[in-house]
Image 1 (cartoon, protein in one colour):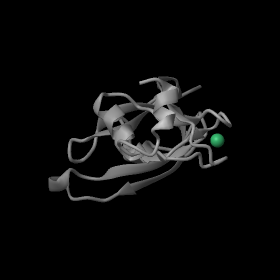
Image 2 (cartoon, protein in one colour):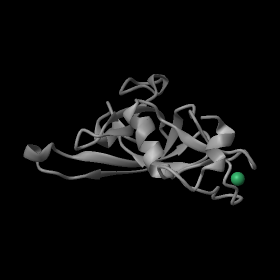
Image 3 (cartoon, helix red, strand yellow):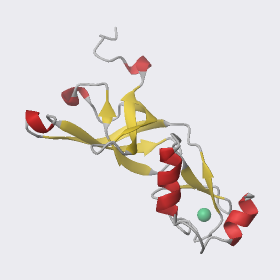
Image 4 (cartoon, protein in one colour):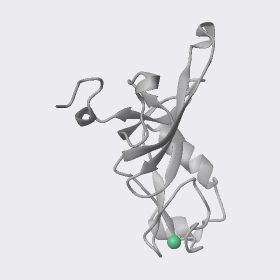
Length: 143
Ligand SMILES: [Zn+2]
């Protein structure tokens, strides 16, 4: 379907949450970008949170993000052990929730550069997870 046709049927078919989930199921992380004001939108919406336009296109973000906040949730070992929850600021602007994989929980820092990929949630469902950028050093000392 063309982008124009998608826009003209914006009140029909699956809602934006379902479209987001469909992309994830296909292994693709997509967010919306407003054709009217060129700003990015997340969570998925029917109308731009900045200007109200319904001309939202699904685009692939760069994946670059910065940790804005982090908390470690305690959980018993038989349930999988502790896990982290982060808020990250995507390079495109939106802030979103997720988790950082591949880094010790206590080593996840505010301001840490991370990269998004599609991973698995607690129930095996696809979700967006983040990994520390290699350049940021995963424990190595930067002199
Ligand atoms: Zn807009």
